[in-house]
Length: 326
Image 1: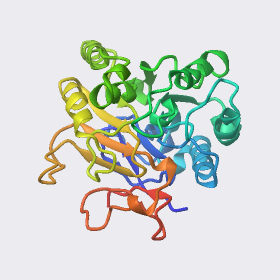
Image 2: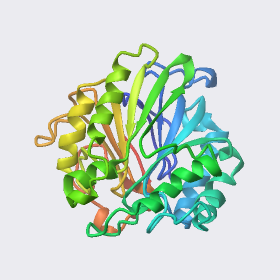
Image 3: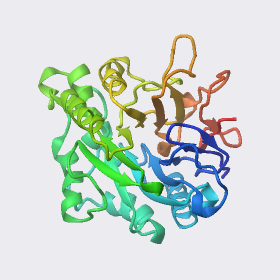
């Protein structure tokens, strides 16, 4: 596998390496640039659409373990945590905390690796976690709730205390980042699906309330939103303008630095700007799509002719992906 770059929270690129399908984003101020290990920024990992037991995901997990045990190789002082951006268990979630998929997908590939044993993972849930194989199927709450139950009864470092939650992480230099992990399936159901499937009609208000509280909290230095369904994405893919119209205005009026999502099976990022003109240099809010844990089929290879930072294939294949800002 090839490796490429590391991204800083406000998206100043650092010439370092990152595992092919797992995106490492630092949570340190962009001015930290010393090459000595003592001054390297802390990092966190994100992965999306990863819920298989297969060589692609196993390779990704191996790179994550390497990054955790040898962080300086990836331009990091340490790797503190990982975000799991939904579609954690294909094709239809788990049926209970005893489902064999926990061992097949989660324990054997991630938890059994010594460097990842003590890492906290912050999951969100995607459409497959609700067993929605198409938009004509109602969300299966029993399957989704099994992932929450697993946090309380089996592994507290599978940190999913509720479908929506917040998590504070302190990074190097005393920087505190608030992660607002949202259930985009609730938003999606209310926007698109049948009215009886709108299971959390006040979800947008909850997000706005949490972010409003963070605005006045002097102990919080930065805010990151994590979810599954994509909002702004320069590549298109599963980009949803109706979801964008609900979530992005909320993020813009608060001090959100970064929105991380999955759902589309590639990696791409852009800064807030005019998508119609391709001007991605304006604004402070960044969007990262990272659903590359799934790999990709040929219909996801949309990078030809694009002059913006996007995921490109390694060795002219559709997967795995690397990132580059060059």
